[in-house]
Length: 105
Picture 1 (tube, rainbow, N blue to C red):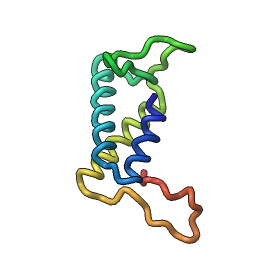
Picture 2 (spheres, rainbow, N blue to C red):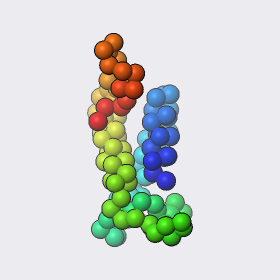
Picture 3 (tube, helix red, strand yellow):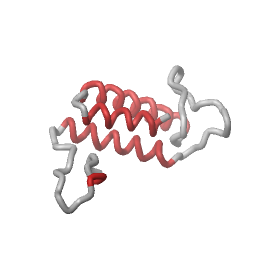
Picture 4 (tube, rainbow, N blue to C red):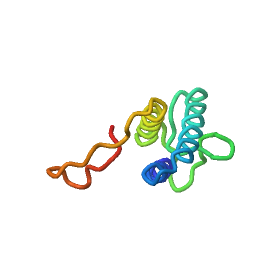
């Protein structure tokens, strides 16, 4: 499930496991791009073993799903930043609440 994968990737990046995070992001971008090429849309879930849209479980697999689109786009942004050796993080400021310590958009 992409939202949990994304949280894992962000944790890996924050703790310095950049190569591991890159491996996951590259694999995910490739898998979702392959599905998009075949079906013309993103899906909420894809099968990690065969790269096909996941079968229906509790509810039908959603197409064009928001968080899949968002995480795919975010991974591309992060990978570009890493390749260009740009800083991924904002500098904290006293007037900004702690929850603002996020990877930049």
